[in-house]
Each structure stands twice: as C-alpha cells, then as structure tokens.
Image (cartoon, rainbow, N blue to C red; front, side, top):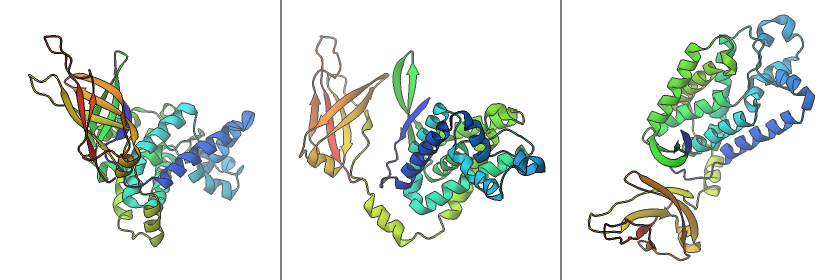
Length: 324
C-alpha cells in the first residue's frame, strides 16, 4: 500500500512542514558531500547511545556535540529511499497537523516528538555503538497527532493489483492503527540493534505525538501565527481527486462531481480525476475552462457504460465550487 494523500484538505499552505522537508533534504545533501568521511559525520551528528553511557567513547566529543546530536540525528538519513519514505509521510500528514496547531506550535511539537523518540531509543539501547539517524521518530509523532485530530479522515492509497494501479480510500484510524501495530510488533520482535531499524523510536514518537498534541493545543497562539495563516491561505483544491460515480440501469451515462476553488473557477484548471464505478477504476485528465460556473456539467464523450446494444454512454462531471 502506498499512501498518496489524505482527503482532509488543509486550509493553509504548510510553510513549516515544507521548510522541515527542505531542511532534511539539505542536510542529506551535506551528508553525501562528506564522501569518505560520511561515516565520521554520521557518528558525530547521529544518536549513538554509547557516547552517553561509555565515558571512553564520550571523551571523543565536546559537550556541544553531545547536546547537538540529540536533535541533529533526526535530520540525517541512511540513504535516498530512507529519506524519500520519511519525507513523503511528512508531506501527507504534516500539513493537516500544522494547519490545526499553527506553524510555531507545530515546529515545537515536531522537534519534541523527535527528541522523545531519540531519548527512548537511547535508554532502550544504552550501550549500543550503532548510530541512529532519521526523522522517523518525529514523523511518527506527527502521525500519532493526526490520528487524534483527524480519526475520520481517509487516506487515498495506491494498491497495485497485477501491475494495475488501484486507488482506494482507507480510514485514517485503520491505516495509522495498522502502521503502529507493525511498529510495535517490530519493536517487540527485534533485538538490541533492531536490525538497523529503531522500532522503539517509532513507537515512542507515535505515543509522544498523541500526548503532546493535547498539551500543545492548550498553548495560546501568537499574533504572528494569525498573520502567517492569512498569508498562507490556500486558493486551490487537490490536483488528484476521487469521483464516486452513480448511474441508473437503463441510462448509458455515468454521473459524478469534481470540486474546484473559486480562483480555479475563474482562471481555469486541470485535474486528475480517479473515477470509480463498481470494480472499475481509471484516472482521467480533466480540463476545466476559465470562468466556469457552479453546477456546470463537463461531458466526457465515450467514457460511460457500454450497453448490450453496443451503445457507449458518456461521463458527466458536475462542477462544485467550494472555498478551501
């Protein structure tokens, strides 16, 4: 299962979440630029439990390096796919959590979740000489917060079936609950090194996110947060949408809806519409002309049902204009 996006649209552009993704990518590029000294770089700025538990190891680092590693480890990654997986999850779930909490509370929340996951891993592997790196713990906290804030949201998920892409919306509580169960089982079944995966940090970050989101929601927002919300308010709808179609037995045509924002209605837009009818699913590229009005129906010729008499119906998509 590959999550593509959630169906809970955030009202504002996720400025902090985007900056966090950019920061992770930048640090990863710096890490790659170390060349033959990359291992030294990871050992210096990664989280190595033995640095805090074994005096002979800790003596090789300054007090500043010891303190910095408790946060810098969450911006390092073990490879491109490690980075991509983490940043994709942050992209999907982080925008809504930031939208609810506000940019500055969200930044504090993210760092605290990463820190909490690192501390748990530190104490569970107190004498380990293996560096732990990655944003997984912090992102697990974001996912835990998402579960609490948006349990009824749905996750648009790509499931390849015999090399055919199939899109399905999975309830967020099921998707995230299954993810947490897998992390918990991984933590319970792994050894001290966890096979290279800090399962305990994932579990710790997820639980920390559930706890911290309730605490930080009570912290009042600043006036600067309000101004940032005004400046980052969204003016467009998701490019990829899912249209549930309906029909009648004698009608060869199929009917559905698509949602656009007022600005998109004025200027025109292009969308990818995943149309589902029965067990059939396909993605269509739909162009909405400028100055379209509420309720207008776009007719896509030949994309309806094939009737027994050989007649092929059309697909009719009704345009709904909504504020975002």
